[in-house]
Image (cartoon, rainbow, N blue to C red; front, top):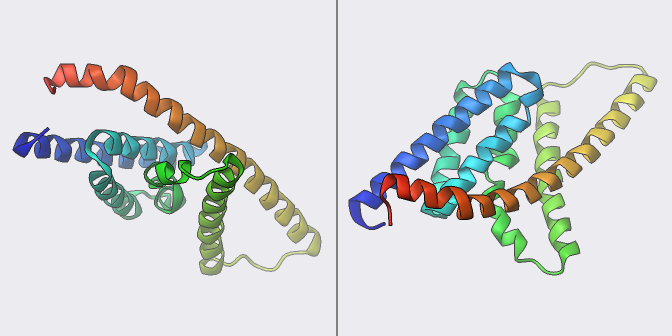
Length: 185
């Protein structure tokens, strides 16, 4: 795609991806089970922008979606999860996928995930400190946080694998249909 037609296509696609990402984050604020699913789905849309228009457009779409999410989504945790990790992960994933061997690649992905999550929730803990509780309560909270982080790592690795499969599906099935429908060669 060259010239103004290519640029207008990229602007339109980025605008739609940003709008749908913010709407998904709003749904994540309304439907409690979607609190982490909605930012992941928004990140998948940002990944589609990267496949279709390039990384520069995708980073712009990510920035706009993250900013609008932080401004307009009432559940700030959903917007912060998008901004801190799941929104930009499809853009940094190709660089991480070039790491060899596979153990180093998986470790780097988990370091990114855990670093972002611990930074995000550490910041939230500092800003909104909980009151003092009993020692048993604090121990139970620490055990629950560890179990949640472990499950989050498993979910993140599944999300990472899903991105590979969805990108392949997009390239093979959806992109040709979309281009045919829009008359793009």
